[in-house]
Amino acid sequence: MDVRDAVEADAERLAELTESPEDVMRNLVHDRTVRVGVVDADIVGFVSFDAQRDTVYVTQLEGPSEARERLLEEPIRFARNESMQAELLVSAGDEPTREIARDAAFVEAGNGPRFEGTETVRYRWTPS
Image (cartoon, rainbow, N blue to C red; front, side, top):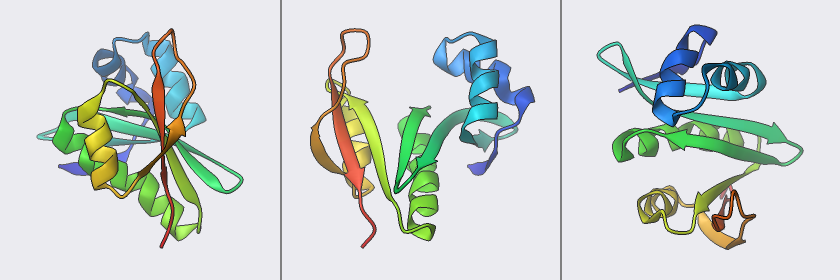
């Protein structure tokens, strides 16, 4: 899988992956850092993140497990290069993503906010 920066033309595919409106994904590409995972010219997943003060916030992580594992390396690399921590919110019942976070050296840091009634768990990565 190759990883590249997302461009506005990717919004349609990102919308398909998330079942979100295309204009929402277009705004995401403009407002956040978005990296896409590409296999055989097809976008299979993406990660979006935003850096604020001393933390890189992973705002979305989509795609099959293997793609998400690789894509999560992108905000970690950014955080490491900038000597920042990274944070990821995961739905409490999403064990596959929780495992991906733990495998990437994120540690559970308590409960996160509820989104549309869904409990989340906050994971934090700290540079060593």
